Image 1: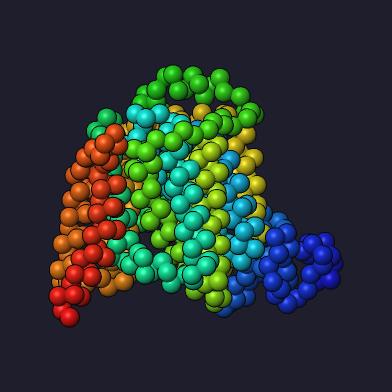
Image 2: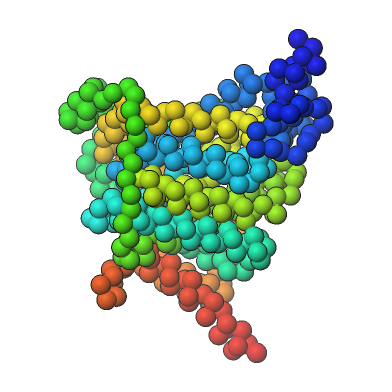
Length: 442
């Protein structure tokens, strides 16, 4: 097949050319011959390879996000297929609202695990209200960034604040992980060991799928040793191969909303970090669409909250796939979004995920919750936060203890836990203490 024939059959809607063109929602320029990526080159967001290769890379993105995206509804009790549906829809919205300039998959955010787990007694409708409220706030943050510029984020949430909130969200969950681990210690231990070995020793993409591989191996071990719940196995056996995802609406309770809103800080940090990472890897400035990315993520999360899915965020796993393949084409993400939506219409798939026993979840979450906490520390390290500064040291210290100890106090009829108090504390205390320190020096 000649190059001209390739362009005619595989080229973007409206015709293609050999030169990179601005990204369109449904059109991409063919990169080179569409079959290979030369050394030192990348396939830009506005480009693509041949469609068979693009579909294959898109499927890799689905595999990369599976372990994390499906683990969130498994832990929180949300419907797996519904979460997948809104994950796919959210990704499509993101690609449209960023005008095809930022390749990203929107999967389930780990940050929502803590408030959703803590608010299970309020019921799923109230939990969805918290997700929807967090999405609406993130959308408003995106609008503010579009109006004021991306630097407003650094002014409102400096690294010392962002790192503290991220760390306390992960560490607040430590008792939950330990309880699940202790319920089936042998199964949990096998799962944990598998995750560690695959993550450390697994080559390439396999190493990035350590959590998924560990969960699968843990599930197999549980099945062999009789660790699967009989009623869940029966549900799997009886589930239909095709069917509609379970949709349900939210209710709004202030206690649940207050518990969930601090998650927005994590979502902003993840979203902005994703935009900066893609910008660095492709050599293209994306500051002008940072606000659009936040708006898109906020809209996707709000939509999920109103339909029954978990909150969404950009995925580091997919950055790893892009770095490994050097393909940043948004065409691959359209394939990933479509694949997620198709899988959402299989109750059999959702029932399979829910057979994962608590021991497997304990082994996985022992790592995952710790990773969230360490991510906060990483934010401090990369920003070189000075902890000899008494403002940084004392405010962060109080924040972390409130979060880890799950400080719970009641204000009127609203009960707030450690995540809420820790986040509120540092968001209020840090600027106040910093201002007092400046006043004292002056």
